[in-house]
Amino acid sequence: MNLSTEGAGDMDPAILAQPDLVPGTFQSALRKTEDQTERYLAATANPTVDVFAHPVCRMYDRRVGLRADWARVVAAAAAAGVARDLDCTVARQDLPADLPRLARDSGAWFSIGTDAHAIGELDFMPIGLGSAAMAGIAPDRILNFHSVEEMRAWVAERRARRAAS
Image (cartoon, rainbow, N blue to C red; front, top):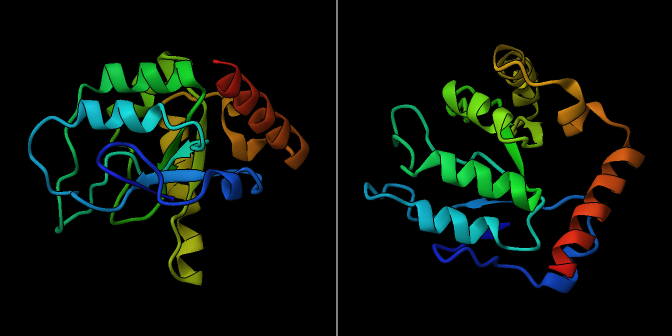
């Protein structure tokens, strides 16, 4: 789901209650040079987002990615139970090397995703696995390493917590 600069989603929350997992990310205003911390905090507060996909929004030779107070952003995401995506796309390698460690230390959950736009891009999964291993992220904190039932239970629990708050 696309998240606006104010953190709002572009889909009906009633529809978003149906999928097993809802990834959200910024798809616009990706070349801003000023600090985007408040934008990230607003997106993290969006109750429909389970995983924040390619969070830095960088792409080699196209854009450097957004700047933020990453310690605040990852702490807020961990507190809200929003998993961080380790994007495997060669052009992204998002999260940068230091951010998975910071997120790990905050108690965050992770998801490893290829962001594949073509079948061959599914082969990029080892990049995300390597990123997780280099950051010392325990497999039990990575949604991909859980069964479908465990992942659904994680989503149900985090959505119930968000609804209660």
